[in-house]
Image (cartoon, rainbow, N blue to C red; front, side):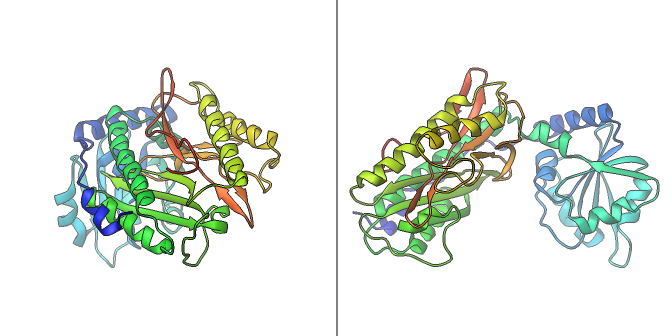
Length: 383
């Protein structure tokens, strides 16, 4: 058994080509075409992942409005506090005009001066900004969510390649976690290793959820540290970020020899996981993938619906610049699956007071059907 300090030396930085300005410009062109089709005169991109998606800019959220207007001809108008202008200019990847405001001035007057007619807002625009924009005279404000989501949920080959690299790295971290487990290790120690291993891989660590024993029954863990004991179910969920794109992978296994009950629960989860994958075919509504997983668990005596013991949450979520984004693998999302979509399959089986099993893998859709980014788990003894 190796210690995590030693295992960490095995990691080296991964690499993938980032998104190039040409691809950002093409995305803007497609957004402009959608705007013209819906009658929108402009789209506001707040300091969100959608601003990154279209312009390559990653700006921190603050109490000051900061972002970009996309006009219906595809041109950009950046809006920024004047003192942030030099920094913004050094970060720009796509050309555009810049409008500034001083601290004592009303930044929303810039919207009124530049846009007349219909303005579609980034759905991530904070209410404190959206309410001020909506009150401006001469503007009809609507949501840009439909236009933005329709583009973002279809990943380009470059995006798929970045996600593949990120997923490979996190898959390797999962295996390293298993190799370094020992009786008495704390969940917090494992989480610290996960963060360090992602940094050593050249990625930004995003999160690590480490749960032992009964705590594995609760989807988002427990608010206290734990120590590992022989026979415990182990749940490790982790994610990192590469060029802004996320990995996300969960493994559940037994530390030691599984009992017959643990094997049964793990196998029920695996079969639900496989059923969801098999259901994920081009043209299939997202909700049918969720239904396929639930039918397996309900046939095994769990549920029904969201009842526990059973599956208390959706079966999956999209993955990209946000770790949770559309499409949503849940009842009510009738979005047809299409090539380029990337999403998780994670129909967690929860038995409160006992244990839980979540096997989370990310798939990407092709013309022929779904493909795993990483090999799924094969048995309850290892990831």
